Length: 152
Image 1 (cartoon, rainbow, N blue to C red):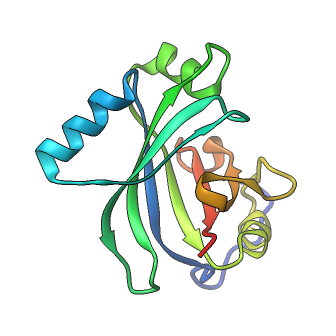
Image 2 (image 1 turned 60 degrees about the horizontal axis):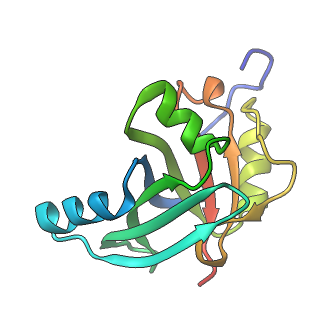
Image 3 (image 1 turned 60 degrees about the vertical axis):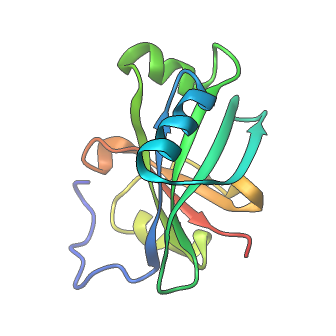
């Protein structure tokens, strides 16, 4: 972020913290921990072949915009997946942060215009029919950041 114009105000395209992605080695054991410790229940579970993960979305709470905030637990299904590589380097823990938006393409464009590299040229399929893009962690304080437009 060097030659980007200085923003005159906050970016208003984001509506909420959608989820925190957590890399784990054993999805079932992680689900049990969050259920027994905090009372969070699984709202959605799926295998994402493209990203090489088995995942579960645990609802934390509702939000003002009608969406919700989740913990997304991610277990790799193959050794070459980004989550498997993350686990190898860092062990279990926070993998990424995701913000909700009503228009992921417009939000990515607006944030990109502020000098943040958008890793996906076009939004792609995410969990439960959502549309997603990722932002470069080096431009986001070292945090892999995802923008999510829900399917609801």
